[in-house]
Amino acid sequence: MKVALHLLFALMVGLVSTSAFAAQQPASFSQPAAETSVMMTKKEARQAIRDQKAARPAEMGQTQLLAGILGILVGAFGIHKFVLGYNKAGIIILLVTVLTLGILGFVMGIIGLIEGIIYLTKTPEDFQATYIDGEKQWF
Figure 1 (spheres, rainbow, N blue to C red):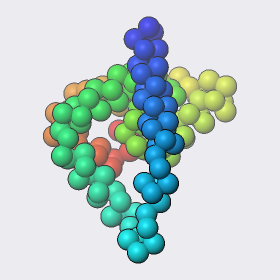
Figure 2 (figure 1 turned 90 degrees about the vertical axis):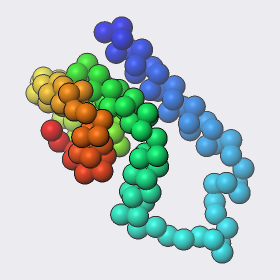
Figure 3 (figure 1 turned 45 degrees about the vertical axis):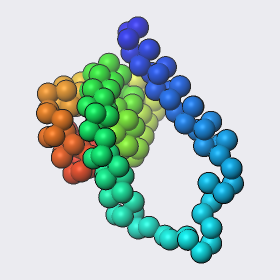
């Protein structure tokens, strides 16, 4: 339990520091100039994110480990889904747990446990191909 709290705290500190950094950026960084503004499609944006992640393989191992541990320890809240960028799936798990007052949280916890074990047993290449490039959100 103590490890889970430390992981959650580290995750929250990372999110807070990232948003604080973004808030400190000058206006020129937050909004592109009108002449260089190019709209990306959703598919192009996802491909750009994949390209960035592919350039950092060491971080992929850390993401896999963090998602696996969070899935095992606090899978009932869907935090492991947010780590992987699957916000809809994370919100679904969280809402099911909260709105049923924890009654179906047990089921969501079992799902998180299974997913965490699956994440940790895959090789980094398989993990990236399945959950990052393939965008497989469930099991």
